[in-house]
Length: 119
Ligand code: 5GP
Ligand code: ZN
Image (cartoon, rainbow, N blue to C red; front, side, top):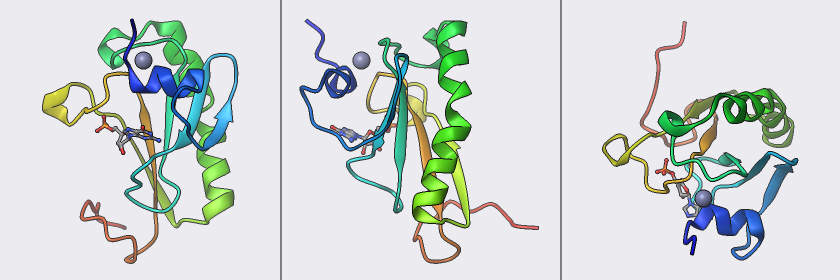
């Protein structure tokens, strides 16, 4: 039996707020957002992490990334956005079904400590 929580989100057993769906991928709001509009993009196929991801799954997943980023941008009007993916517990992965984080950034008001110098 598959007890992966993101597989359960895909099959509807666990409720989620859908941002985007097609036959290969599912995007939904993070239950505990780091900033307003924090979204996760996952493949429908259970893949543990980037190390395990078949090329065709990566290709389909990353091909929709600009669409997801723009949907979040249009809905929340952030000043910028981080995309990040954690692979392995040592790197901070806590759910072992691959997911790409979209974290909108709002100048100095979003409270996140992670900052890159702006030019
Ligand atoms: P990780 O630390 O593995 O990179 O990120 C896992 C993310 O999944 C976290 O940001 C966490 O808030 C989110 N998450 C964990 N469980 C659920 C859930 O049941 N529903 C939703 N929507 N997000 C979840
Ligand atoms: Zn899964």
